Image 1 (cartoon, rainbow, N blue to C red):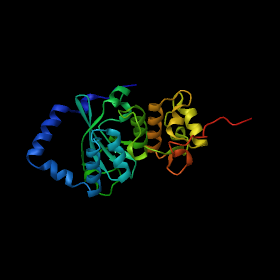
Image 2 (cartoon, rainbow, N blue to C red; image 1 turned 120 degrees about the vertical axis):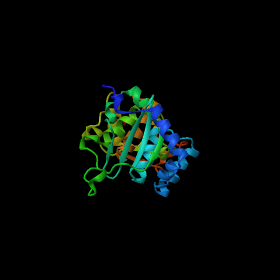
Image 3 (spheres, helix red, strand yellow; image 1 turned 60 degrees about the horizontal axis):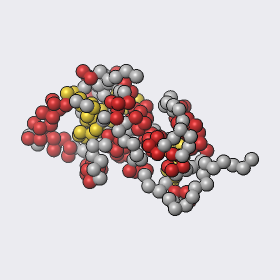
Image 4 (tube, rainbow, N blue to C red; image 1 turned 180 degrees about the horizontal axis):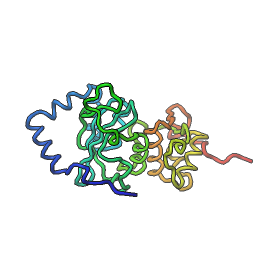
Length: 245
């Protein structure tokens, strides 16, 4: 897989200098207060849970609120500015997240979240609409970030006593399902199951199962239930058991 073109990204040292200057001039505070009160509350919650640097949790929060936002992601000694547009399911970036290697994705951390500096493609106000090639489909990037990014356990929103079912086959959306993921998704489309049962399927593990469930959630392919009997950790699940022939 090709690596990202690092020259298209911002050197971390320059970003730190800019952030320090903005902090001194109160510009950073003014930018953040332009976010909705709901978004600001969500970011404070991430800080209290010590998840503020978690790239996947930050992206998931932006998607839940359906509010466009600019997220600065640290990738080694570079800063990757990514503007998410949940309503249009596209993102703006100097290069596609799909160009990143697994190692590069595993290093991503959230540095800052601000209001977007650009508008989505096709917006009636053209002054801040960027070049068409700088916009990319969001769903494939979310899928890669969940499967290969830094987070190895379930997102907070869907963790706990729950069962999970796949709504549809991600392959129909051209989302890759290598190795054991394809057969696991097939089983998850047939029946709901808690994470421990998904983890026990052939070729799976607790981490792979968590990453898959996160990917299904972010791609709108997951049905999570707290009401199913097997969602209770104290109840043995009958799901995924072999049927008598």
